[in-house]
Image 1: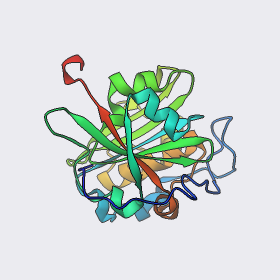
Image 2: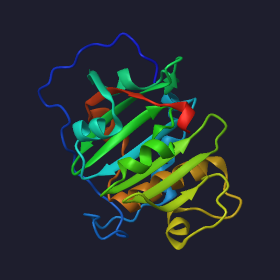
Image 3: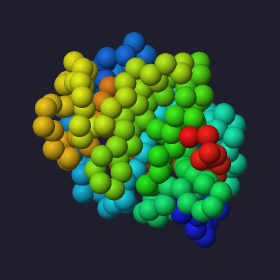
Image 4: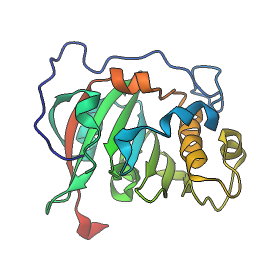
Length: 222
């Protein structure tokens, strides 16, 4: 996300929780819903992410804890319109990411407009230590990466547009051979819901207050 002139948001009500629904696959899912691609067709025409996006769920960590683990710096508290539609998830000679982090019940959600921090191995691996991370990245060309990690162990890692293997969980979410771009995008969001137990609705995204955070990345160690 590009660093822009941002309005300060009052601290009251920051990082509020939202009633969740979700998939019954993982044992920690807290509702009975089993999401499918059609549940996320609403996301297809969203204009905010024309250059791509990355959503990363981190279980059992508060946003300040995520910032500390990433070695980041909180800049200010912002709303959804301030966070999206900039098209620059990382930029500049120092290779710093600009991300938004919000609390959703017992998870933290990292949102990036055209960023890929959530699928950058040197950052997301350590972030998953002792917990679960589910990340869904899509680039400008429609390809991307879906990651599920448990205590630094990779459980899923594939390009949603061209998965080499389709697990039963992926098939249930909507993945199939020859999947088209729109369906792949919707299916990744459905799969993330099944794995986290958290419905990512547009209302949830709009209602959050986000910690705008700067995270450095040493490209030499990639």
